[in-house]
Length: 81
Image 1 (cartoon, rainbow, N blue to C red):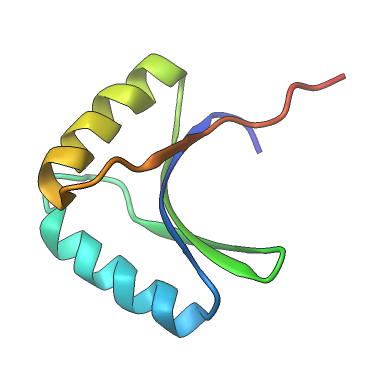
Image 2: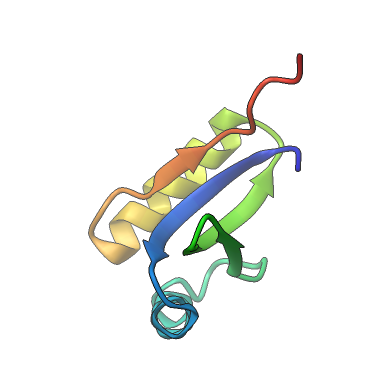
């Protein structure tokens, strides 16, 4: 997967991730794209994106921090070798 993602949280159960996503969506009504859940390595990751580059993701992450009260993680794909 390409692009830069903003990870809002990671949860051990899909139910917890889904509940968090719904709560985050209510707080982030200005976000136009859907908040997605990625299942990987036994975790359900709640995230936004992909964004074209890190600068774009960081600008959105700053607004997310202001809305949610904490800084989300920015996740870049591993470099292709």
